[in-house]
Amino acid sequence: MTQKNQFWRGMILGAIAGGAISLLDKQTREVMKANVQKTTSKVTYVFRNPGEIAEKVKETAEKVKTTVRQVNEDISFITDKVEELRDLTPQVTDMVKETMDTFSKSDEALILEEVLGEDKKTY
Picture 1 (cartoon, rainbow, N blue to C red):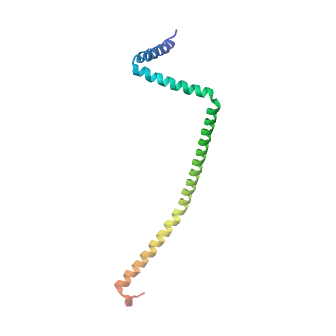
Picture 2: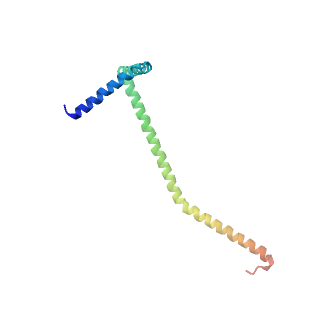
Picture 3: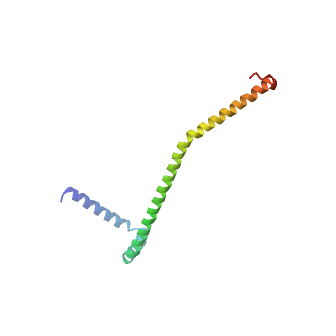
């Protein structure tokens, strides 16, 4: 045999020996027995009811498709709203600047009137 085959053979034999040694512990044996029984019953159920399992897989696949479709729609909606905001932002900024300018000019005029008095306006 080649060295490569010897390596894999040694790995398999080592794993088997390690598994056998670990089964010397009573608690490990009990846990393994319970796990093997659960797995066996599940595998048996799958072999006896392949149609039911196939139907569950189809239902799950349909749910996943629906969820993906909804997420895509949500992403499209959000993308559209972001684009709208990008378009509106310059307009809103201009409106805010105009409003600030209007209030600033009004405030300046009021202050000037207070300082000069109503009858002393020269403009």
